[in-house]
Length: 118
Image (cartoon, rainbow, N blue to C red):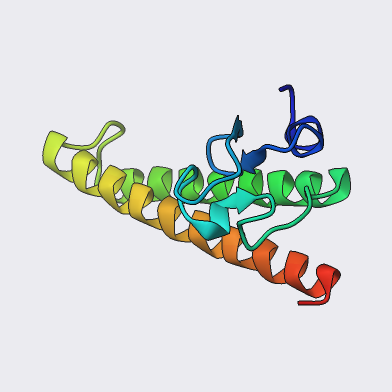
């Protein structure tokens, strides 16, 4: 299936994180907050406006993270960073990105719950 709407219309579930169609059964996605279908906490696909807003927010956050990393590297006197410092910086960036993803999924779930009256 090409997208969330087609996937749900065929009786399947949509996994938010991997953007793929799966059986509408438990443990097919990365958890109930990642699952759109009869079983997950999300019962309907996000609107285009919601997707666009999230995409814009993500791009803004990525830009800020890149700017922070560039500032950090400039302050340390290196344009590439040391191998050790670069790895630590990337690990921190990955941690922040994973945390933000969880926050966005939780926000979307809450919004969908409100819309569906749960």
